Amino acid sequence: MKGQGALGRFHGGFEGPELQIGQALAEGWVFRSFEGGGENRGGFGDGIAGQGFLAAYVPGLRPIPYAKGMAKCIPAGSSLTFQIHYTPNGTAQDDVTRIGLWFADAKSVTREVKTVAATNLMFAIPPGAGNYQVDATSNRLPEGSQVLTFMPHMHLRGKAFFYEAVFPNGKRETLLDVPRYDFNWQTAYREVKPLSFPAGTRIHAIAHFDNSVNNPANPNPNVAVRWGSASENEMMDGWVEYVDAPAAEISTRIH
Image (cartoon, rainbow, N blue to C red):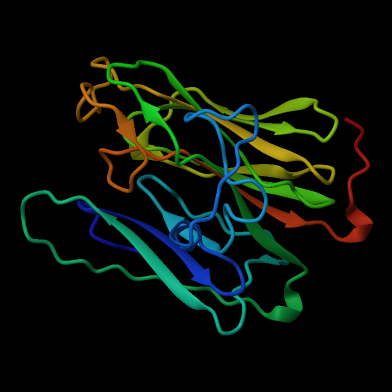
C-alpha cells in the first residue's frame, strides 16, 4: 500500500458479518471499562475492538510475512473500507494510494490470523503533562490462542507503550515494553515463537503521553489533547494479531 507520504496514514478493513469500530460508534454502542473506569481508562469490552481490521500502514512500519499456513480471511461478499488520515501542509497534493493483496491457496491455510485491540477513545491529556497514563484492555482471547504480533499506535505525544497479559486467575505477565516510542518509526513486534494463552486471557495496554514543552514533536503543549484521527490529536491503540490454535496444540501452561 502506498500513498502521499507528506499527508497521510492508511488503515484498512472489511465490512462483513462483524462491526467496524466507526459503525459501532455511529450506532451508539456503549463501551465498558476494565478496571475502575475513569476517562483515561477503558476499552471496548468483548465483541468490538479489532474486529474487521485487515491491515494498516503508518510511518516506519515494515511488512512482515505470515508464517507458512497462516493467512487472514475476508468473508465472501465483504466490502473493503479504506480510512486515510490526511494532514494538510498548505500545498495541493495528489493522492496515489493503492493496496496489494496476496491471495493464499485455501488448501494451504491451516490457521486464520485475527486481530484484537486494547483501545481507548475516552481520554483527555492535560496541558503540559509530561507522563500522562492511559490504559485499555482487549477482548478475552479464546481457548488456545497464540499471539503473533504487537503493534502499538499513538501520535506525536506518544512516549511509551506497554503490553501485559491478564490471566483468568488474575496473574499478570509482561509481553512487550516500548520505553521510547517514536511516531516516525512505528513498527510491528513479531514474536519469534507464538505466545500461547489460556481461554479468557486479556491483553492490557498502558500508554504514556508527553504533552509538555520538553517534547520537541509536540504541536501545542498548552491544550488538552483528546482522541482524533489527525496527528495533532492522539490515539491509544494496542493492536494484537493472533491465531486460534488447533485442538491438538492447545497450551497446557499453568499460570
